[in-house]
Image 1 (tube, rainbow, N blue to C red):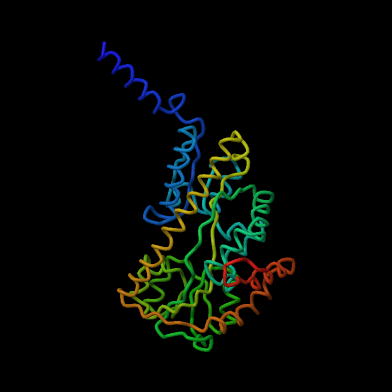
Image 2: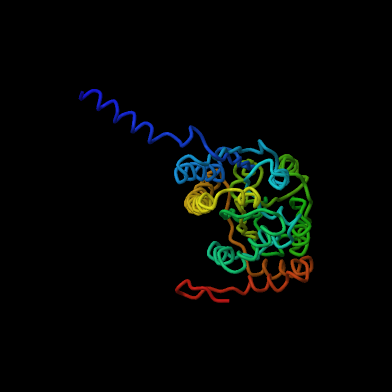
Length: 332
């Protein structure tokens, strides 16, 4: 009798741990461009675990790193077509909504605190609405990106030090215009060609976050890492609005809760990663130089205001004039 009772209790416990109906009610395909070692991928896996736990297995998130489901623009198109559900995307969304260019405007965001004020305040909510209504993408969280810095074989302290420097930039008109205003000779080039171009002297410098500077091995062909911090931006984790709306209300709430948890996880891991990458780059022999940030910012602003659309200039000024008092409270 005692053995029979034990077996009944054991079966009950096993049944309680099984997913309702023997499997998930909803499957979410989450594709992104980062590799499996990147903090983006680790954050996506964290989101998958959290949503599985919160929903008692009703939602299963399948994560596909390294562009397995396509590049960033491909993913956006696939979400809009209802083929996949989620991705990580940034200023590439300006192909559909111009306001998302603000995610990577040079010298717009001063630091992490300023970024948080922008994204989590009224401006961030305005961007959210535009993404939902114009592109059909709903943000469930955001990730801060590592600031972009300039690497070179001679130190750069002020804009004058850039005179005549041939600098590789991504094929982004705003970036080209800004570096021209700063005195360099920007040359658009695909990322895969940069190392060889630096090695052969075709270009003299390039700009990227710590993560790409390290993973691409630029420390082998560049001596100085000049802390220009010229772009401090962010990216969104998004779900298709149609796909989100198709979920029951209780699961919609859980997706957003899991998104907040994922964002907090990324914030912790991102800080660790940035500190570790700086240490690795220093150990690899790169010399870090401090730059005259205000001098760079003043020259860059002229170029930015020439190229951004008139309708967005008030928003640009609103962001650049945001301040924080000593207690950390927002002021506009």
